[in-house]
Image (cartoon, rainbow, N blue to C red; front, side, top):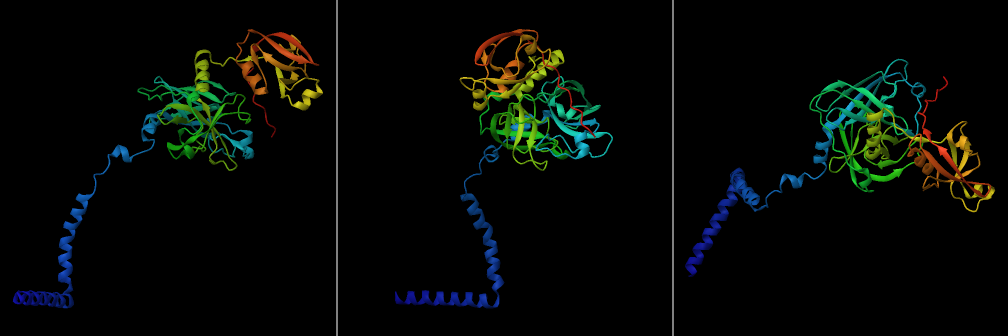
Length: 389
């Protein structure tokens, strides 16, 4: 037994000595042996790893929504004369992300976006994108181009409807803005800065934004999805690729996105488009009053029991309110069957009335409750205010 151990010890000693000599004189021999073993070891490790997950699991995001909506979003080039504000280089706090305005006299090429809502070529965009344009060109995401015909505009909601004549047009599916909730994921699709169609993502930051001084009728969806010049008239879509809004304006001090953008709800845009396609105009009621918010101080000065209603600050001559006998200083509390608490309430309630219909209104005058019947007129189309040079 001792002899076997002696032989084993001698063999180990000789083997170690050989390895030592090779490592000293020919170390590359040992490295070459390790290189040949490496692939085998690597293969063994790869076999031990679990299989890769399916591509649909790895590719999380909004690719499907973008694929559904993007083909129906177009770029719009509108030729128009430069506005006075553009020549003066004004930079309003609330900007319409339409495009860079040339400070020079002569034709202006503005860039905006639009959304195809029907396969027969009906497009939605913003009024301020095409207002005053002599020529409107539309380019689809597949490269096709067409000249657009202006069907109609509604400056008070900043919605415009265009029509193009092309075959096999993609139409975006329409969603319901009423189903949106704060925190829902949304995508903004358009052509910012003319770099090409771009998709940005964000969430619904707020709903029902109004009294911003952007449009007459305001009920904006606020989002932090990046909206920049060129995005005006583009699509705001939900996570399923359905249209929920038309991108319109941004809050910005520099002209670029600060994460506060506003979109017209698709419900409003759809109603306006239907009226423009059918009648060429949006019919809204009008009674001809100028309003102010009724504060507790004003209510006390007017000897009212409570600050409820809307103060009439002025009455347009020969308007329905004037013909009915309403006077400045009256407090309007109800129109038809709707109580009104703010000027925005009154504006919306009157606009919802059918022109040439009759409505009963309730007012407070010097502490007395009065009732009047008015013949509602068609709301006049707003006139552009001429600016001095």
